[in-house]
Image (cartoon, rainbow, N blue to C red):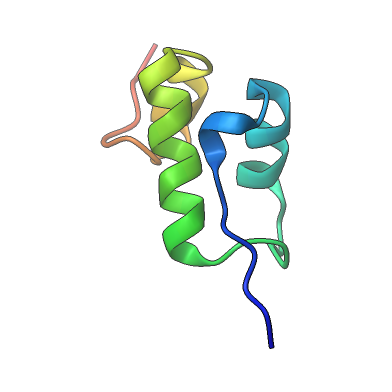
Length: 62
């Protein structure tokens, strides 16, 4: 079986967001999911949403 090298830095922010929000992620592993989240955080895209979802730490209370 061949493995595809997951490169989140090559994906647009929208695609990364879609992968993260998939209720049953079949396309990527947990490790790849973590890399996708880290890439979005590095780009500073969707930071508030990621935080509220608990993906980056404690959710904020507005």
